[in-house]
Image 1 (tube, rainbow, N blue to C red):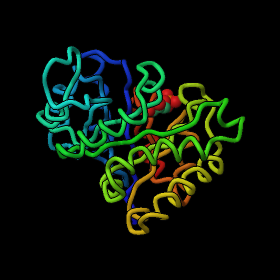
Image 2 (cartoon, rainbow, N blue to C red):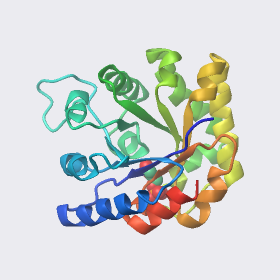
Image 3 (tube, protein in one colour):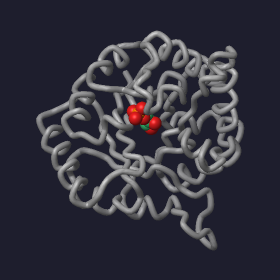
Image 4 (cartoon, helix red, strand yellow):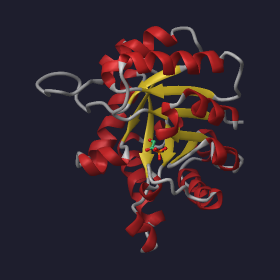
Length: 249
Ligand code: 13P
């Protein structure tokens, strides 16, 4: 049985004061018990704050991105080792906003994935189609291409040590959630694609859904056979909302 993972991607939101309240609120709620593994991914500058406040809370923390390079002349970038230095367990890789706003390619995403795993971080690999791609019937082709780029570069066994997040781009921040069945169909496709190469890995890998997950739709999504949790954006910025999603497991 795969353990459900609920991950909060804060994106570029937060402040020291606001984070303090948010982290303490989540920590207090989680201490009452939830059935999910929980991780928060604040902006990089606030990772040390999360590390301090979440120490021994049972809640993990992670980065939203990392450089594919180990170190050197890459102004503004953050390496896997730096995230590791602050006890990050996870790092989001290939988020659609990185792909679209920062022109990250499938090949670069694969390099980042490898850099993360080499250091001990667990990648949360984001894949998902644009609205135009879904309307053109290309959803499966797009997620297959994005997934294969990583499998080809890192090997199928590497997938066992990662988390995949299916985030249809048209559902991110739009209030338009994929229906539980639409999400399940793509999750099943992703799992089958992994299974075609290694059945054990396919059974183990956790596949999260992301895109307008809210307290009122989380339970229905998480109830689907191939949905092993969620990658939560907007709703992770409110402790009560995020906790309600964690409890929907
Ligand atoms: P929203 O939950 O705000 O739609 O964002 C989803 C997302 O992009 C998480 O990475």
